[in-house]
Image (cartoon, rainbow, N blue to C red; front, side, top):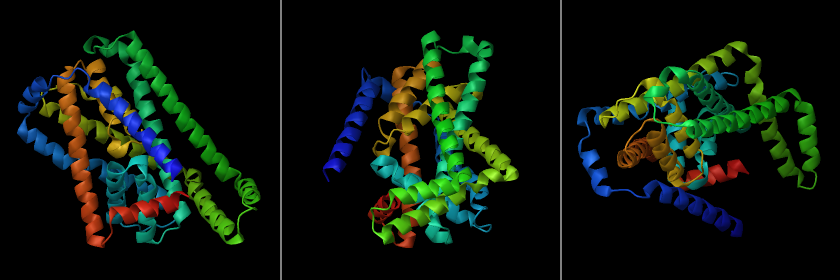
Length: 342
């Protein structure tokens, strides 16, 4: 209990720090003036486009799940994504990343460890895809440098974030490949570590670990790998498109390609395990808009608050509607996620 309170206190502290810098020097009259100028038709369109990434993520997920089960229903993959993101928006610690595969595993009778491994693969490719797009953006810098407000230090910081992201993704990829190609040694070492535990517990852990490693056989299928890479680009190009449309609702006319650093930075902010992605997402969203797009800070605050609110409301409505239909509650899912994470 003490550890939980310490962790919760740290999360709240980090969230508060990010929110302090996000709201610092805000002129709320200006924020309100900007928000009144929204193009209502385009804004309504963004509400309907908000679940777009849930659809593309579900399509992409199939190429991982095919290694275990060929006929996974699209509606269940979509529901798992919606529920997982709804939990992430509702609770701290990004427990939705665990709930998402566990929910699908129960719906489709898929092995728990296998389902969990697909989320690790998903996060690796998410990071690699955005890092690749960022590299393309930085290499093309001479073609558009006059259109952006960023200075040398801003680009240097962006390089650093890109290197960190690529390093983390590479580390996770190497770790995953080692788990799979040195499967026997991994399980043997894990069995040695689990000796002090009761046999029932150690056998359960070993069983789930073996299922988890088996889920990484995806890397042996060249076709699945190539299709997954393709759909990873579709997922993130779709996310960039969503923000491009949203910005147009507020009169921020920016080239689609130039939104790459903004989306990359919001991804960094969203990865911070704060409640509802609050704080980190807001700070990095404002930073991306003011630094690279030259958006007025007050407009950046207003747009950030609304784009986050739309995503939270739409996703939670979908996720909670699915849970209500199945007679589940957020607390039951939280417990499921905590058990699965152990």
